[in-house]
Length: 328
Image (cartoon, rainbow, N blue to C red; front, side, top):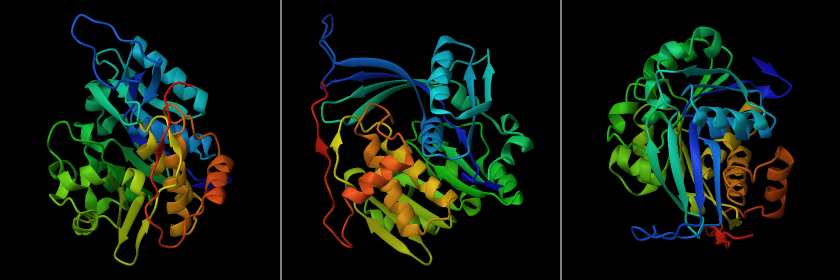
């Protein structure tokens, strides 16, 4: 299941229509109107964002998701087509709505969300038949905590039977299930991606190294904790890494974590050494913040250029993002 683009990758899970609004420092008082710098409707969601960035990085990538037969679904698919993702496994169902989010971007580049449930919460294992699952030498589930009807343990058991590498990116759990949602799948998981806040909620430990070790004890072969401006940490039985972020001017951090995952999976698909894969992931995550959504990542060469210009020392102090004014 390899080709000149590296191992094939199947991204399963969240596809969201994002209504992106910036800059929003505070909501206007009731009955009043504030001006904003920009408003766009884009494809979003952990699986879709990761797939889009992987495609721009030259990977052979397919997306499996469930959306509605509605205008938001139309816009989301149009946005994804521009990135070159194979969409023949995205299913449309007129009995569901396309999951949607309003993304409010603060002037600092940080963001908050309003989320409406839809197809993500209805995606089930029968929506990912064997012919689709077997298309990925790497099977990645993006936004696992919102995929309420997807049996993660059963999906990954099938994927492992096919010889695939498996990975999960958690996302914030608005349903409060946390480890109850993941527990059965983790013994079938090669790489577990989560951010520092989510890791704390999963195991009740806020210190990232402690949380990483606790998550590793739950069954995955490796745990990667995304830490935003403090970089990322990797934990396995045989190796631990703590690599700093790359210093960039931040416009929008919405897709940083998804782009990090895409960078890691791209390195994995090309069999790059782990430290190089982690640096590439950090660079992809940082570069995505320099434009709206994940548009800051345009190619492998652009990510490598950031690495070449800002190669971190072996044990430097964590780099900090430098906020940029949102108006261009």
